[in-house]
Image (cartoon, helix red, strand yellow):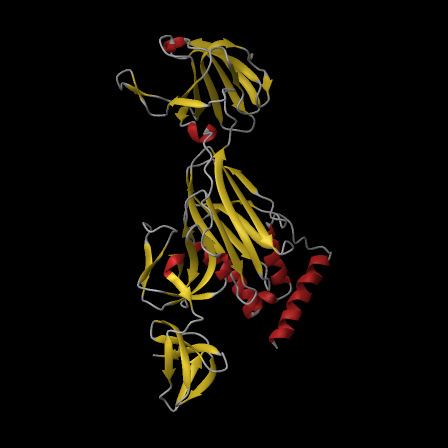
Length: 435
């Protein structure tokens, strides 16, 4: 029956993908929403598998694990399960977030969506990858928490590598090779009477100062603090770029510029007459200054290498000692649960030296890969003493019974979870028995 349902499911979705008519399945919908509509149109949302896929999509968002950027993981989605993965991370206004996803096999489909968590109870979807999983690039408009969700289509075995990085959303405003920033946002000025409202970029006198974005020059003037200045409004943005202490202004008011066009030459006019030649670069939004560093920061951080063996993906391992399952891939993170020696855990993905694992009760978290061992080597042998011992497919007395063991049979103890033990009989059948 299960095989017949699989055939029905695949046939139904294939039919719907080719069907035309008055109902537009793709109107104002993300690829994930389009697939959900296909399930509903085929009536598969009334089946256990289809309903589980829809419910997992929602519940994964509420159970998102916390990570920091940059981040990289390799994971595995099992066709025999209904999986999804979600992660929450902080990002700063002005950064560009780049999210890339590679898959094996390449023809498989994983839906990738990005949300802004301004309101935790009502996340706002801000971007989705197409079905080819071309990278998502998003310029962060608000400092705060963001969330990404990955979910494959039903009945697919797929290995994936997810990489999330941040970088500047604007080009660097000088052509100086050193890109030397010598004074930062918030530094004290005039004996700490005021705070620095920008960054100072040092370079050779009269070296080019360039447009960090395509846009329009809105003002070219002089003032006491900035000396000779140029104001540039990037196209489609709600902020203005401020170039100060110029030796000479090249751009003219009303001029349209492209990225890299020279707007002035570096100097030390205004209140910078006694300092080394530099550009004061600022950004103003809604009448106030904002920290420009995230917009232009030339320092690129790369994710840590994945050192945990990916050969353990989708495998069942056990803890080698008393260890913690963490909410983030670092030992300083919040503890989800403390695990006893021999606890069974299924491995979903690998990042750095950590595995993301799932316990039999559905709890998910990160665990150091060095604290896990293979279950292939049994802890010890057990002799069944009861007249009849039920072997469940899950560590739950309400779960389905796989087999019944007889008194005197010997089984291998592979691990444990709560009041249950994972065993393997002489026929290599694996299941759970009560301790």
